[in-house]
Length: 129
Image 1 (cartoon, one colour):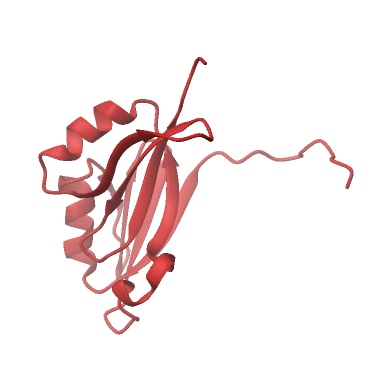
Image 2 (cartoon, rainbow, N blue to C red):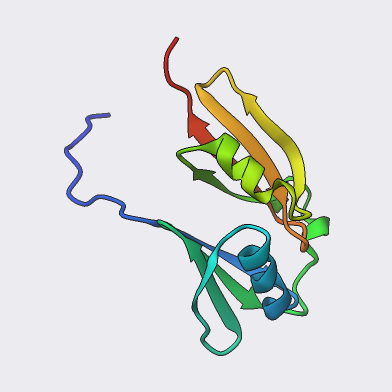
């Protein structure tokens, strides 16, 4: 298949998560993960850090995340200093599923689980040989 020059570029990343208690979940993102409250429309909290926004929607009757198996993973967020971020959130009671580890695909990664059960991987591109 022939590749054409892209006409538009992606300038940021947002994720939408259904959560049972939007205020509690937003507080966790802010206090534990170092995000900031960006917007608070009715039934929602938008939290963000740098070029990433997490859009939290209150859905108290949604299927519990813990019932979703591998679909608990919702995103991969690239970061410029994974070890510093790991140290930043490490003492805040974050459920770190695995700490920083180098992967054969050229990324250093760690994964965390939110109090609602969502999982996210943070990765940093490895440099050098």
